[in-house]
Length: 174
Image (cartoon, rainbow, N blue to C red):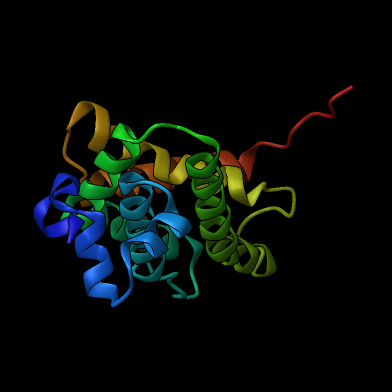
């Protein structure tokens, strides 16, 4: 509903009708219209961004970045970005956002774990940070600069990420 018509078109009453419950049930569970929209969009995105397994970390990361870029450009991704941008950052929303990203990183880290097992990247790689470094450029372009996110761009991001992972050993923090 939010993806097709925009977040402003969603009402608690319509969500309750579609779910077959009373409006008060929706308010008790979610609190606000923004939370309803964000919950729905986060749930949708967690189900529709698969984790590739090609046998190559480079191919997996490119495919993963491509799926994120495609999602971001679609109606659900646009609605999610808008909902996150306009929603008040209260403790429930902040908690939902943290929970969503932690679950996404836990699912996606398997690409890095497999790459470590195959010897493609060192064991010292911080999987969550590597994944943040992978997806941040696409989010930056989609949300801030509105530059194209094409295949050559995604390949350059992945290649630079892998070069950085492969050649750098962090110094001890004393």
